[in-house]
Image (cartoon, rainbow, N blue to C red):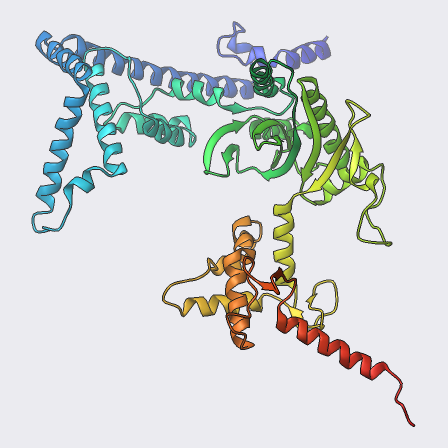
Length: 520
């Protein structure tokens, strides 16, 4: 009997320890009484805080109700006037701001006030003040149809992401009207970015196809290539890397509360609680350069070739089903992407010892939607450019291994060429190239940035290096090779005359040394 009571006590412990339970307190143990008392104190404090907030709200409401009718009428008239004549209201603000600036710059006669008042920051300030005054008048008359500028909403979202409690304190102390926390919570929920597997991504492509069909009076197939790349996530905020703007919030991240609760309950944390630290984004680029964003998948750095192959198959099938012809696949040459390419080639190796040209089955794969067509495989030229630049910096003088770039004469080619060009450019009054510290001495971040890699191989950089070499070799301007005017006997030449003559001299000396000497 006692064992059954003990078992029932454990099973109903949550009900027994609830402060609203009808179980007599005399039936509780000392530890259970302490737990119930603690819960009751917590509930009492929460109720006290709620009562304080309600009392404060009642006081504010009473103050508003006790306000004179003249003040309310004045505020309402101000709101109506601002809505009826927004341009005059703005001009009045502009005149007041210009008067303040003139007051602060009494001794500066060279200051151009017209140019200063036309700056972007000044216009944004006027918009902010105008909106803040209008919202303040709306609040004074007891309404809540506030309007918020994009700048204010951006500041509010940045503060809300730090935590609702901190946002509440900031909102109470702010001199301007700030959006309610519920508004920010709903906006954050709408901005949640969920994992891939969304057929709505293809709706825009389908609509574009319908427009093409109706305009051309016939069915028009959109052709192009799918692009894939993996990106790092920063916290639980999804950023647009091109403009560093927040575009959404990930739902696929670790929930610390669940993990701590599982650890306290001595339960095993399941694998799906692993944090997503990367996202694999897919895009489609048509032959005329139009880019469409497709699906994306989060992963906790556990992405493999099989997973990529599954994603690729889903993307191709859905694109083909809306009328798009996929003719190419582009990605970088990373390890996981290389495994996917190998699977698409039926596990055939790329290496070809017989020559530079690859067999056709190494560069394409059958289209899973239509086996009579093929999808051609490409490695991203941007990643290839970065890899070549990094290989150049890894090269060294006199090396003969895979880390060395060597000329036809066996001389090492390395980043000293770029450093010398950068030093020469610094001594000039006007720079000829865009070389900077990031392009000649890259760190871990700039090595992954494509802009410094492009600077190292763009036309201005190569032209400056060629100019220096021509000067050192005493080659006149008439003899120099230029991409648009160099010709030999009216025809475009493949090499510079000095290079041709040096090659001829080298071949003659080689032939003379290899020919047998006539002793007779």
